Amino acid sequence: MIEMIPVLPTGVVVHTDSLEDRALLQHYPLNSTAREFLTLIDGCRSLSSIAEQIAERYRQPREVVLKDLGQLSLELYHHGLLNWRETWHQRSTRWLLALRTRMLPAVYTWRSDPPLTTNTLLLLSWLYLEVWRAWLPVLSAGLLVAAVAGALLAVLPLLPLAYLALALCLTLSICLHEGGHLIVLRHYCGAGSGFFLRTGPLLRLIRPPLERPAAEIAVNAAGPLLPGSIGLLALIWHLLHPWPLDWLLIALFGVHLLQLLLPNPDLNNIVQALRSGHRGN
Image (tube, rainbow, N blue to C red; front, side):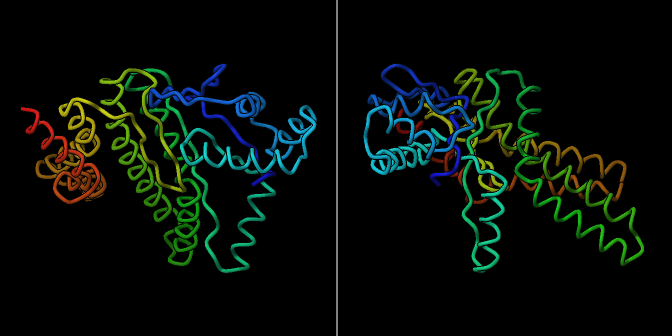
């Protein structure tokens, strides 16, 4: 990790005596060493290079400074206040080592802050690109398998095109689900609130706590309802004008409505908000 490159997320701002997380509306106190470390982060230099510069300036052993900065950076990383970027050589080495040892490689999370806006179209456009960035390795591997299978089964143009249609619908349904949460959150908390943590193909919205139960219910329900409404419209359209591909839309978009019926984090948050609202009354 000492040769990896630390990167400050766009929603994290370094002040004279504190570190501000604009997305969560929080401030963290900083000492002089932590502030200098954060101001030296430029997205190009490794942790080792930054530690060496600080050690020379204060005439301290490089190993001691590197150990302290390593602990600090790990703490910031686990709180979503710092990203780690690998070089292509480091990433390749990590995967080759995983293949050699037959173990899963370490997966690093990456914080992505949406644009400072409440515009629905801009937020969904940005989020759709983020979903594709998260799913691109998996979908690319699937496309390769579909192309090989299509060649073996003599349906080369058809099978990859069907797979691409499936990939487009899948990524769009994920985008609308997470986008529903984000759009309603921005409505209640303003532009800049909330960020996404990307772990492999998974995206998770991290948001500040909501005091009003109605806002909590709206934010959690908006995720399943936005793509689920498309699934319902596809079902109605299928009943009026049947088309084989309607079932693809019904399945990929309508399945989100199950999150309002089956146990999952969204439904759990809604139930807790209803209980707190009932106790408040």
